[in-house]
Amino acid sequence: MPPTLTHLALHVPDLDACVAFYAEFCSMRVIHERAGKGSRIVWMAEPGKEHSFIFVIMPGGADRQLAADDYSHFGFALASREEVDAVAARAQAAGCLIWAPRDEPYPVGYYCGLRDPAGNYVEFSYGQPLGPGSEAMPIP
Picture 1 (spheres, helix red, strand yellow):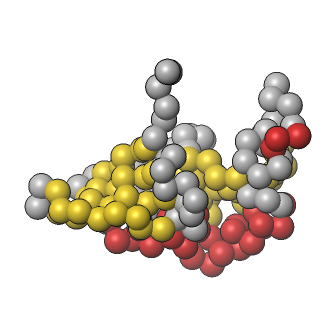
Picture 2 (cartoon, rainbow, N blue to C red):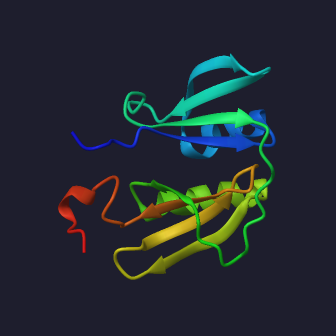
């Protein structure tokens, strides 16, 4: 059997702020917490995906200072353009919107970007050949 991607582990400067961000904007929830080397380690997952992919969030990281033209990011798919606009509006109000909603040719689609409290960029998209409704879309 080939390897399966199961988790992403992040050291962050403010654990509670990052947990709150991923709960608020990504609808992830805490599925496990444990002590680890004098600190708390938190596992988060999207509902229904607890056994397939998680974020492991740990304290002790440095704030990432990504350049404006750095497109390193975590990508989350949404079910409509309106949902992308709604996330962007909430992020604008919270002061964490970095890429206003924009439309790009297939396979990129319609997306916006946020900065999490650790400095990671997080994209919310609609119309990519991944995520909700993608089963009918060809992957180029």
